[in-house]
Amino acid sequence: MVFHSIRWRILAWNFGLLATTATVLLVAFYQHERQNRLQAVDLQLREMMSTHMGAVNDLALGGNAGRTPPPNPNGRPRNQDNPQQRQAKAEAALTSLAKEKTWVFVADMAGPVQFQTATAPVEPALVERCREEVVEETEGTAKARQPVNLMVSHLGQRMLVHRPPGQMIVVFGTDTHALEAELHLLGWKLTLGGIILVVLGGGIGWILAGRSLRPIDRIAADAEGIAAGDYGRKIDVEDTESELGRLAVVLNDTFGKMNEARDRVTQFTADASHELRTPLTVILSDSQGALRQERTPEEYRQALVTIKQAALRMKTISDGLLELAHGDLAQPVEKSPCDLADLADEAVALLARLSREKGATLEAKLDGVSVLADPARLGRVILNLVMNAILHNPAGVRVVVTTGIVDGQAELSVADDGRGIPAENLEHIFERFRRIDPEGSRHTEGAGLGLAIVKQAVEAHGGTIAVTSEVGRGTTFRVRLPVAA
Image (cartoon, rainbow, N blue to C red; front, side, top):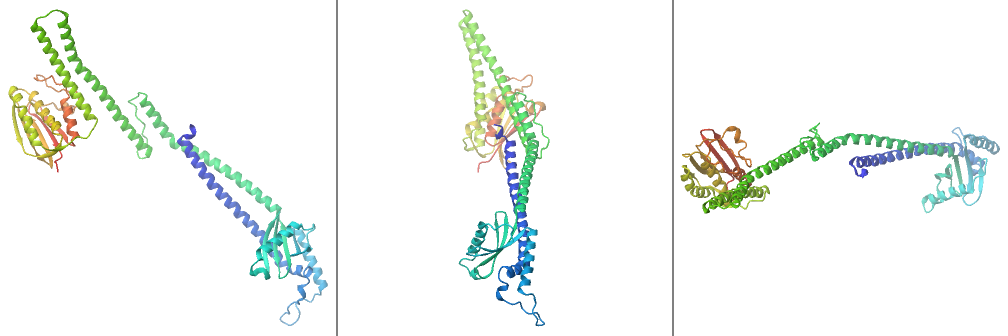
């Protein structure tokens, strides 16, 4: 599904993070703004109480509750007004509150409203809410006999509830419907702004995700082209320092090695088919010729000898292919301690007769050195190298087999003073089905698998093999293996 794509996942994470961040910030801003505006209203109510509490006291609470104003420093009373004058001034002061959309009422904690400045009667629910807040604030505490000031909100009204000592409460209030409407509008504006911000951020995230993932789409397209058969195609590498650039380099290297392996398999199949076709042709030709008409016993015998030689050649090729296939599996070699000199000495002894028949001189200079190896497999390596030196050179060649320790490693050297190998052929000498017999060589029956098997066996033992040669001067193969601890 499209929603399972990386682009949609990145967009979902981006959208979620942006929406969460925007919601938290906008809610915090709204709450801060609301708190600031309510604090401004509260400050206005406190100033109103500070300004008009004296008038409320004169008009509604009985004129300072029988107390006389304190004298001024020269001994005369501060206020010379009589009670009627003070009441008239108080009525005038409280009447002016209506112009400011504020009001005051005085109520008994257990009785009805005693005084109010509002043009409309005070709602009983509002009075009851003020009483409940006072009771909840003072019940069971030391504040029960102390003056109490509380800020209360109720149905679009903001009130400062003052309870002086006694059973009366004085409430200064103002209408906050306009403020609530402003805050409501602000909330909608912030919500709309948040939605626009999230949508805009999501769109930018979609574009950026597309730009970031475009190289992946290009890599996928190139990889699909390669998988479809365009083996010469390469993934475009724009920036090798980035993660995607390094991925493209790795994929190019991987596809390159896969193409090389495919080419090797194709070549290997073609070479194997070619090598097996010749002995098969010989077998079919001789057998069909023998069956076509009556022949003498000697002719039948000669046909069977030819068929046997062709079958042996096929067996040699198949055995070599099986050994190479087994080595390609890269299975661990079962190693045991053995002496490289003993294995070389055994190989020299086995090939002594062959060297005499071919007119070669075989010498051994062996120093004991212990290695961890499969003796049978390593023995075949030595046999193969020495046999090649004898068979691929003219009569009179001198072959020297040497073992010892060189640069901390066990070394086997097989050197001859034969015709040598041209420099242009040295880099191909270990390839499968590669035969580099100079013109006039006496030995051309090989399938070209021997040195490939040797190299594979040496590397399976954790060693290396190298060859140096000079035309007319001879060839030297050097095998180096880790020394047994």
